[in-house]
Amino acid sequence: MSDQVLMPFIGTDNQENKERAKDSLEKARAAHEKYLLGQKNNDLQEAIEYYVDAVKYDPTIPETYYRLATLMWEQGQISLSTAIEQCKTAISLSPSNKDAHLYTGYFMQLAQDYPSAEKEFKSAIDMNPLTSGRPRMILSQSLLNKINVKEGTLKDYASFVYYFLTGSIMLAWDRPTIKMFYKNMSNDMSIFSYNTVGKFLEKFKMYSSAEKLYRSAITKTSQSDYFYSKMGDLALRTKDIDTTVECYRKVLEENPLNRDVLVKLATILQTYFPENTEETIDCYERLLEFDIDTAQIYYELGHLYLSKDDKLNSISAFKLAVEKEPENPFYNNSLAYAYARAELYDDAIEHYQIAIAMNPDAEWTSIVCEALGSIYAQHKGNVEAAVSTYQAGIILDSKNYDLYLALGDIYMADYDLDRAIRAYCDAITLKPEDSKAYSKAGIALWEKDYLEEALVAYHKAVELNPENEFAQNNLGIIYLDGLADAEQALEYFEEAIALNPNYTLAYFNAGRASQEMGFTNDAANYYQMAIDLNKLTDELEEEDIQTRLHSLFEI
Image (tube, rainbow, N blue to C red; front, side, top):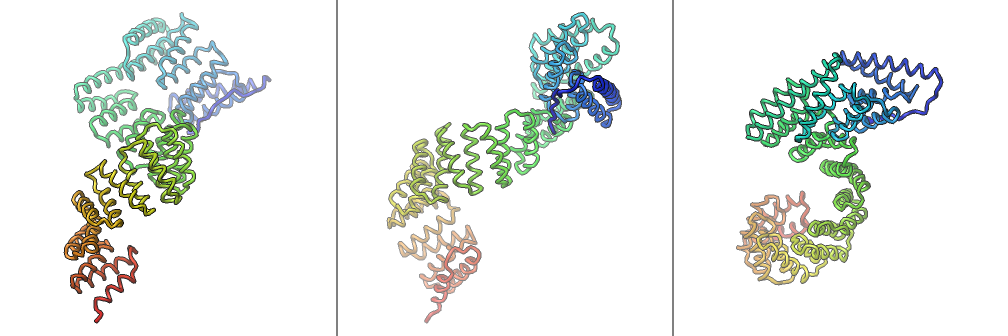
């Protein structure tokens, strides 16, 4: 939708242009009337073109602005906010033009800005109170619509009755208007009835009856989009997500500018159908046209592009969110993550640091410290910066288990075994029922030649998570190389292989254990499996395996 904004042109006052404007306006009115009768798109296009010509020839005619706004909004070429601005232009050109105020109020009512709409309608009434039947009836209709959509107050009901009765009296001699109005009023009263009964049924959890009622309202009123929305909300309450999505789509087919439903549909799709990113992205892009909460929308778009592994667009979306709200730590964090995914680590570091400096929540910020520290450790090779960042995160949240593990890992990478062991032990203190810290501590203890302690750590890791093939394999290594217990070691290697039939190292170790026990054929089979798998996994030096295999048959 291209939001075309009509602004008054600096025109000429010569009589020829005024005549052209008058002629275009008459043709526009005729085409407009034909469109209202036949609902043909070519009549709509013709009316729009003539109204535009009238504006070009004489930009001082207020009627062209509010009528053109009506047609362009109906066709989806402009948003409600733009239509309102065009109607306000008409008011600025002719403050006493009753119709300009009525049209402005109409669009404000559609935008559910009921206080502003009522103000415009009352302005039209005040201009000529004795002949204000039509504005009064329109205002009463707006009040009824407000009661239908929102929880009406006692004052709203009283105002509706007052303006309806006084408007009805003043319209007594205006037969065409009253006929059209009562047709609309009958529809609104029908909507009111369906809505009231539906709310009653929902309140008493008679959801099936409420759904049937709303389906009937869809066919018997002109507000099918409103009742599709009600059905969607009801289906969401009963966890019927497919029906919810179907109903919200129906609403948008009939009213593509329904912002509330766009938000609901985008949220439902993002939550329950994460694979349907294209439709969700489309919803958010349409929401951008309303120019409301744009930073949040760019933020959501960024995550959707990330889910598609579209790094460039995710960065662009997050950057736009940060440009709108540069001091939002969450937007900076997401932009940093997108940069890291794109391997733009210097940019990622910059925005992670901004997010950390803002520190909206100590626990959240400690997690950001973990992300920044991993970039220093894994991609920049800056051990000192990584350690400092992890320690800063621990100060912010001393219960961040993953930070202690990360700190232990970087000490291990730097072969600072004492500090690594201390960090892993701190992690164990935090989560004594999690196997990861025991496994990592076992490696550090083994490297430190603390054999008994490493054995205890790995036994605990296997006890807590018997499905961990790496812990099973490492425990086998301790028995084989530390305790020279090849028989016990082989049991753990075989368990590791059972858990992961493609575990090259476990086959190699099983071969070593079998060789120690004199099981030559078994050892040969294990070594051969290790050679075959290693061609795919490339875990080991093939020459080492070949050497051991050949040594089995040396005399």
